[in-house]
Amino acid sequence: MVIGEFCAIYSEVVTARLAHTGGGSWGAFVLPVVVMCFAGFCLLGAYWLGYRAVGDIWIVTVVSVTSLLLLEPVVVWSLFHEAPGRGALVGFCLGALGMLATILL
Image 1: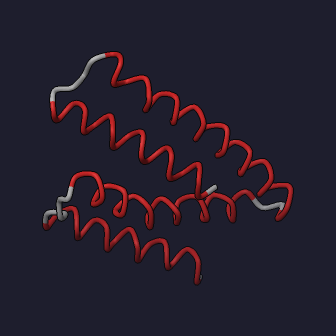
Image 2: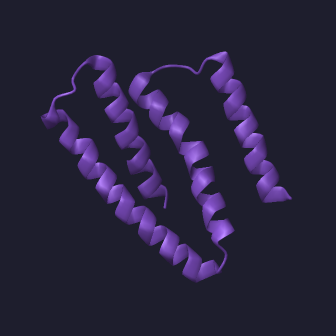
Image 3: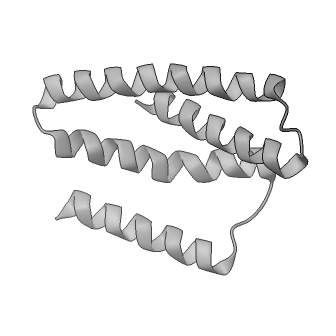
């Protein structure tokens, strides 16, 4: 699941970067599409295997969302080298607290 989430986030961020830099040619857009297709296969397999293993879709969903919460800032920082603004940082912290509440309660 982590590989699928990483590839999906990478594709999204690369596409946003292409839009930001003005490199929106179809040739540059092919790699993010291929990586996103691979990510989709990984995520579908992870959800299928995860549900078969634990029998609870909510546990699988929490793992997915938690991996998004942890991986997305790392991928965004590595590609854009931008720190989050005040609103984004507050939103990230509240999201982390919500995820922690979901896991602990």
